Length: 312
Image (tube, rainbow, N blue to C red; front, side, top):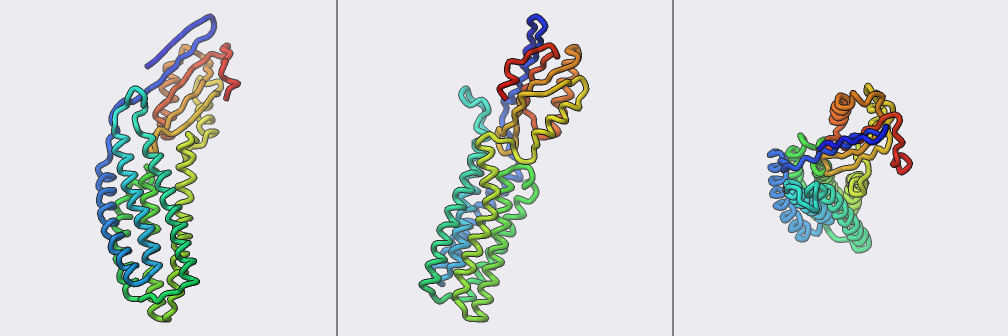
């Protein structure tokens, strides 16, 4: 939609492009989430069972982490399905923001898991229990295989979507944690020190905390319509200023529509309003290269007194 107005010496163009089409979900992502959910659900059931039977806090802690990841995968899958819905009258961007909400919920679930794991590990220090080495080694070894396979499912798309990246980082952390649990089982079998079990559990909690913190911060920023990671406002402004026929740029705002799509509004002052259409095409192409597809540009002449300039 284009709108061109002229009043006295004031000329402006307001360009607002809404892409009201269904967002296609990559088949690779769909398969990754589906098989990831199936594999990890089976492993969580087995790991919880083994943890209770053999009194292993390491296994229970790892199972709790994996349960959080299964919940996260399900939430992310639901968000992707919602994002496919077409726009509606009261949701003009559709339900794409559900992907951001999903990443925030994932982070919250994992932080809750950290608290539960740490609490139980501390209790184990005061009430130590005997732990078997071989059951830990075998169960966690299966976890290395299952988690490793899930990591491979997400590795191709991890740089293109916050949800996929979150799933990838969590499953990679799970793989590393499972390796740690295997090592703890070997040490317990070798030394007979059952106290190593809650120690490994606390280490797992710390790993979860660090792997989750970045996701939490980015999710909160996106849910608050902050500038998405990887986009520098000053760099965007500088690129726009370098474009031919551009005098100045102001009233620039960038925010996320989803975990993969970004929007922007900006006022651009032109040297020659006759070259408006050419400039518009150049600016949109430049912004697309920086991952900003949904753009609203208002053009102004040098003689225009913008009433919004002081509101930034």
